[in-house]
Image 1 (tube, rainbow, N blue to C red):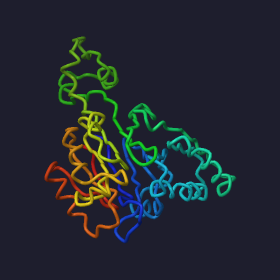
Image 2 (image 1 turned 180 degrees about the horizontal axis):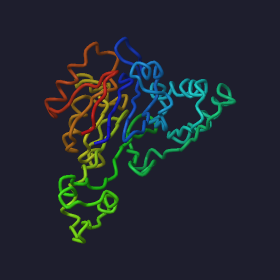
Image 3 (image 1 turned 135 degrees about the vertical axis):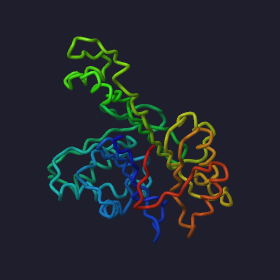
Image 4 (image 1 turned 90 degrees about the vertical axis):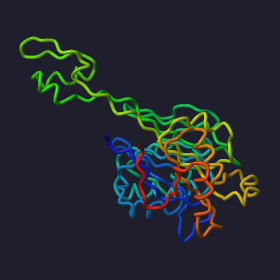
Length: 305
């Protein structure tokens, strides 16, 4: 299977700490690189993770709090300094467009590449990006300002050629693509070999959902049903539930409830408050409800499987 990974560049919240940078990650799927949120320090994190700046083709901004977007302008400026010529696409709440254009005009005039802005309606669940291999959907969230998450889904692939069977029937290689598309095979002696004998099932499509920032949403799981990997903010532990309610954030326990109800494969916790020196308390309360949970951390990559 082709790689489908999530590279964590930052998993802290509003205040950077010695342990965590503000929110940012790169989703690597089928050879493409998509950035999700772009907090301060993102360029250093990219260097540390050995991710080429030029491979990033889209940036998805969940909302317009600084810890999720203050790193974008500096990164776009660096792209220009590196001689980038390929366009980059920015998906963000629509009201960001005029501000971004003003900043680009002030600090990034004369760049040799285009920044293409796509306004996202954060209250709608819809496909906002699509190519031949994946789709990206917006996930409405409930924060203090307009905010949405993102759901990356692979499209179904074609079945695999069963090498042992095509060799047994001496099926010529030039037929393989047609067989994958559903055609029967034709042996050199003219025998018609049913398609079903010559293929193995396709790999099941994988999916990854990013949900930050949001208060606990009892019906959020309906949009996340069965995803393989879920990143859900867990800013606080349950002792700070009053803060979570006040600032429209979630606890580790609440993130685990979403994961459990959505029947996800794996849960990544993140967006930790700076008040915690050690996030183990968040992990423990999450694992009490959803055992297959772990803490995300900068510099780590997580397979979607």
